[in-house]
Image 1: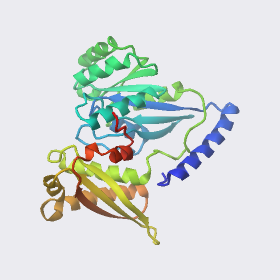
Image 2 (image 1 turned 120 degrees about the horizontal axis):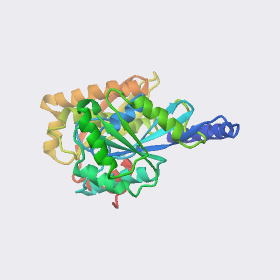
Image 3 (image 1 turned 180 degrees about the horizontal axis):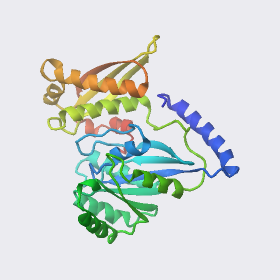
Amino acid sequence: MSDETGENSEAGTAAAGTDAAAAENGDGRRSGFVALIGAPNAGKSTLVNQLVGTKVTIVTHKVQTTRALVRGIATHNKAQIVFVDTPGVFKPRRRLDRAMVKTAWSGARDADIVLAIVDSERGVSEDVERILERLKDTRATKVLLLNKVDRIQRDKLLGLTKEITDKVEFDKVFMISALDGSGCADLMDWLAETLPEGPWYYPEDQVSDLPLRQLAAEITREKLYLRLHQELPYSSHVETELWEVRQNGSVRIEQTIYVERDSQKAIVLGHQGETIKAIGKAAREEIMEAADQKVHLFLFVKVRENWGDDPERYREMGLDYSS
């Protein structure tokens, strides 16, 4: 995974050209975009990581962790499946909420297949009702994924399936566990057989279209929420300000954690800086694994009031400020 988007684009173009020629020779390659739609914390990000086979999107206890479209790329048999992890769909209250929900549905609108993932334990909540109502007008192939099926009795699961499929006509239903992978092999087989024939969009070894420096910022945001999800409000943001490759092959990374108030800054720093040190240590270890090189990570905390109303922040996250 390259940090240079230009290199990714050129590699993708070259691969597409090669694969287009292969498709003309009738090698049976398939490709397409598969969007995941669901309520917050339904398990979308966990499932994308499970299907891709590596971590491409962050997972936390905090709702609405995913803010923009994250694409995870999996190769299965002769198919390249581009999974689009979307923000959770919920009733928006703020500008950022509206932008996230709009982004989620834009991902679904442009997909070949839409996977509607429902937490079996929670059943049909208001958010799920809202999603099902909108899915009725979605033209793409629709698949219902009942997640966390290991936590619900079979008779209740069958009743939930009937309740949902009576509301929306789905092309296929799968019962899965995103956490342990149960049912995911059958899902991958079906997707690989169902996507349209055509050239692959990305090189075979690429697992995400997210630039490495952006993934690094997301990893730090994940560690931030995992450590402080009860104390820290949703209004925090992480940016990679510097990515400097040194002569010895290591990389110096400087990131800024933005919060809205001084009281939040104190929470992130912790007593004598203990909290920020723990967050940095956890983030550095995972970034180092993702980058496959030694990492020197330096974290800074700054107060930026009302960052959620800053158009520049929306552009950086790939969200529409006008939502």
